Image 1 (cartoon, rainbow, N blue to C red):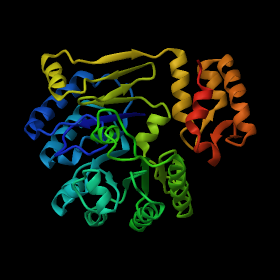
Image 2 (tube, one colour):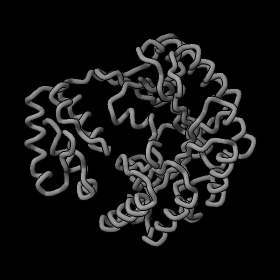
Image 3 (tube, helix red, strand yellow):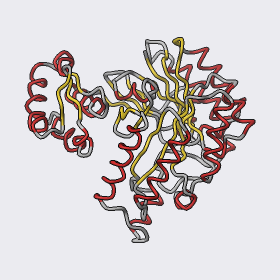
Length: 374
C-alpha cells in the first residue's frame, strides 16, 4: 500500500498561526493544475504499490472548483495504480462548504473531509484570522452529512492567549454535539515567520502557561475518551476503526508521494521535497527538470524516525521489529533507555510493544528524545 499527497497552495488569506506554504493569487489555479498533471506523469513510477490513500492538503484545497478537481482525479486514475476502497480526503474551510460545493464534492471520488474549524468561539476565530464563524462551522458539518459524506474530521486549536478552561470545555462540548468520527486537536504553536510569532515578539500577546496547557489537554483527552473516541495518536482521536488511514500511514512508515509546491515524499530509504514556491515548482515541471531536494536516510535516521513516529500512536514501538529492521544493538539500546520510563509508569510493555501511558503522553517529547540513537 502507498499514499499520495497533493499540496494545494491557494488561500484567500493567511491565518495568523499558519506556516504552511500558500499563495493568495488565484490566477495561477489553471497553471497549477496543468503542472500537477505533468508532475504526475514525471513521477508516477516513484511508488511501486497501488495507492491506498489520497490526501488533498494545503493551503485550502476547497478553493479548487469541481472542474479543477475532476481534472486532477482524471490524472490520478490515468497515471497511478489504485486499490479498491481507497480513502480520499480533502481539507476544506467551513465557509467554502455551501450546498452547491458540497454536492459537487459528493459527486467526486472524495469520501472523507477534514475541516479546519479550530474554534466555535467567534472571538477566537477573529483573532486567528479565520474566514468563518462558529455557526458556519456547525452548518458545514450538517451539509456534508446531508450529502452522504459521513467520514468527517474536524480540527481544533487550544492554548490561545487568554483562553480559559471553561471556554475550551465549551469548544469540546460543541465538537462532541456534531458527532463526527474524527477530531484532531493541536496546541497553538508560535512558528517563526508567522504573524502570531511577531505579535509575541512585540509583546502584544502572552502565551498560556504550561500548567494551563496541561489542563487543556487533560480535559480534551478525558472528554473525548469518555464519549467513545480512541486516542490513537497524540493529537488525534477517532471512533473505533475510523482513524485517518492516510495520516496513520505516515506514522507507520508507509511510503508516499507528495505532489505540488513544498510537498514531501518518502520511499523508505530517502526523503524528497519540492520547493516551497509555486513559481519555482511550476518552472521546474514545465522545463522537464523538476526542482527536487533529496535526503538519503542512514540507518540511524531510519531508527530515529521509527521511534518518533510509532511512539506517537497507540500501536507503539514493536520491539522485535526494531531488531529485524535495525539490528540487535539498537534493540538492546532501546530497552535500556526505556527502562526508567517503564519503572516510572510513563511507558508500558504490552504484547511486545512499548506504548506511552497517560502519564507518558504528557511528556512524550522527552521520552522520544531519550530513546533516539545519538
